[in-house]
Image (cartoon, rainbow, N blue to C red; front, side, top):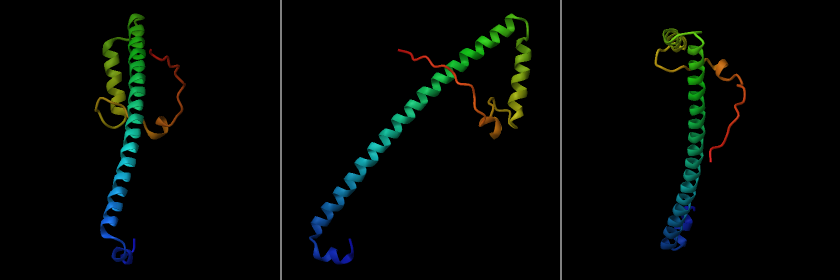
Length: 114
């Protein structure tokens, strides 16, 4: 409100109005934060599921390759180090270039756990 109203309207009324406005904004912010937290929890669960699927796929693929004699553990370690270094940093992870990261991937069927 303009300074004129500060002198005309009861000061206690103005304080009460300000307090109620702050409470209202606090409730709205709390609801929004709660919604964002639920969304993030859902995304984390989704990513954990995808990670579990990738672990399973990777272990099965490596087991099949080793059983068939196509490659051995030493070859696997060499390739891991080569790919790890290909992104410019040997850090135990792979960050693909932007154009590779944006490439669409084949859809993966998802089975819901009950």
